[in-house]
Amino acid sequence: MTISRRSVLATSAAGLAVAAAAGGAEAAQAASPTVLITGANRGIGLGFAKDYAAKGWNVIATTRKPEDAQELKKLAAANKKVVVEKLDVTNAADIAALAAKYKGKPIDLLINNAGIVNDFMNPKPQSFGTLDHKMADDFMHTNVLGPLQLTEALYENVKMSEQKKIAAVTSLAGVHGANYGMVPGGYWYKLSKAALNAAMANIATDGKKDGVIVILLSPGQVRVEKIANARISGMIETPEAIGGMTKVLENATLAESGSIIRYNGEKQPF
Ligand SMILES: NC(=O)c1ccc[n+]([C@@H]2O[C@H](COP(=O)([O-])OP(=O)(O)OC[C@H]3O[C@@H](n4cnc5c(N)ncnc54)[C@H](OP(=O)(O)O)[C@@H]3O)[C@@H](O)[C@H]2O)c1
View 1: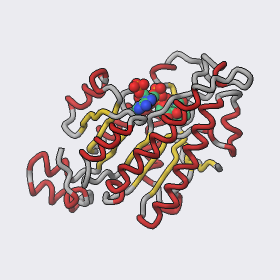
View 2: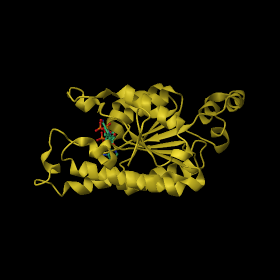
View 3: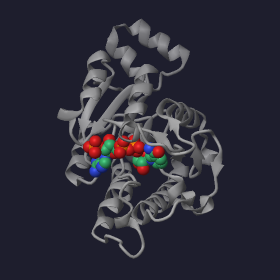
View 4: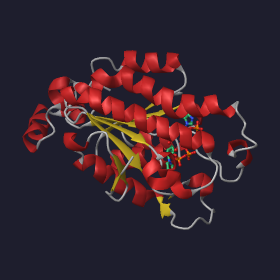
């Protein structure tokens, strides 16, 4: 996939006309914005990949096991603007390789979605009194330090893009203003999401001078594949969550950079 600076700037109607006049799939591809998504093989990440592909974006869909990512393979086979890349967000070599491959190429929107999710069916290791302290490192590395390292590695790509947006999928479980999701336990998940919020708010402060917008997305309680049959009150379906969050991202401004915004557009106090 070739994405030139000149062409990515051409996202307006005039730009599209220029691309069309230039002819060829490559010019049309270069005229579209680019999104990079982590953990794009299932759940919310796959929902983002499908949604942006349907909107005609260039989609860099990353997953730690491309060979097993059947849904992504299908999506890429049906859409030339979708590429699948290997990325384990805890693997520094993967991050460096991806950054090297895309050096000098604009990324309009970086979505830090990959994460270890709270396992409601197995509360003991994250409950006070029976905490499994060995688990803490995995949560912090995957949910905080990985996204931070990836964002640092791809910051120049975002900065050189037209839209200049960075998102991270957080949870009300990591938000003091939401009483940590009003659920008991979940220590490692809550600590990791609270730390992710702090990290991204810091990047928002650092990125303001460059016009980079950082948004913490709160997706609601989403019925992803692995909890398809769970009966949890207030659950929403994946397309509703994705539709809401993509709208939030589309409308996001520099003035609200660093905010936590729910899928329905409500701002959430930290
Ligand atoms: N679903 C909800 O209700 C909800 C609510 C609030 C926040 N969130 C957040 O939304 C995000 C996505 O959650 P989900 O519900 O879609 O969960 P999911 O279905 O469990 O998907 C998690 C994704 O993260 C990937 N992942 C895990 N560790 C990774 C690593 N080290 N490197 C790269 N990818 C990794 C998984 O890849 P593998 O397939 O390789 O494991 C998978 O693609 C998470 O950050 C989660 O905390 C979800």
